Amino acid sequence: MAVTENQIKKVLSEIVHPETGNDIVSSGIVENIVIAENGATVTLFFRKRKDPFANSIKRQIITAVTENYPELEGKITVSIREEAPEQKKENDLKSITSTGNIKHTIAVASGKGGVGKSTVTANLAATLRDMGYKVGILDADIYGPSMPKMFSLEGYIPEGTTRDGRDYIIPAERDGIKISSIGFFISPDDALIWRGPMATTALKQLLHQTLWEELDFLLIDMPPGTGDVHLSVVGEIKVNGAVIVSTPQQVALADVRRGIHMFQTEGIDVPVLGIIENMAWFTPSELPENRYYIFGQGGARNLARTEGIDFLGDIPIIQSVMEGGESGTPAVSTNEEVKRYYRAIADGIVENLKK
Ligand code: ADP
Image (cartoon, rainbow, N blue to C red):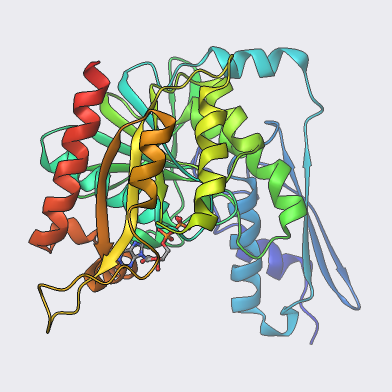
């Protein structure tokens, strides 16, 4: 027997918009359901332009419908309509200063992907928290948001709230660290070409509408390289400093240099607080005195010298660092050696911010 419109409507009425708390059927978001021979199409209408929850609602619909009616697997299409743009709204958004109560906003950047930028962000956040600071992380890596995984927040759907007539997104919280991720709003399965512009718009909302309350540090996990997202972040909010992560490999270093120069460009003027060399060497546990410089030695330290920026410290390859990224708890919380490396780096950052 074919699935009916009412059956689908019933499934959809269980889904709520996190910001309003109302279900999407009775609040009018579900505009239309069409059942055809080759599948079903649901049209959603959002009164708010670029509603940051649109995409997660779309994902929930596909999951819920296929869970209830497996015969619709791969045959359900969800299209999104929204209110026509209004000039005024963009200005409204900009005037919200959700980062106004944050003492230091720091971008964590890298020339290349895979050098450990997200791992460093998570561990640095946990270290600063252990030093007594109030810390938040904004995961702006639209091409590979890792914070949901690093803090066991996969599938997390943020809630919304209203304060003084304005809509805000409430960040997640893990062990005292507030976390907001572009990964809460975009699906890794969506095509990059579509995801790019959509994610940049969602990111702007995260930058302006996340209810951070008071923070000493907001660490922004940037996408690798240099690009639109970087310009968008530094253009939208005040960034007090950038920390650059690199491995010792030369190939990584050319990109790193570009990254440093981007922050230093006139008009952007974000002070580079220093460079961190990650995966600096490997020490096997059976030979604790030995250091193997697998990716070369001291590249980032030399680069810091030639660029006239600070070298903040190095972190060797340590198995528990990788495991920490998988388990949801950053390694600094479980491993004393890792803790020491990160503490030295965090001290350097705090010191450089005073200059
Ligand atoms: P990026 O954010 O630069 O793309 P990630 O933080 O995702 O990089 O790190 C890439 C991989 O390397 C992850 O699997 C991570 O666990 C691992 N990794 C990062 N730093 C270390 C380290 N110091 N020791 C061991 N593994 C590490």
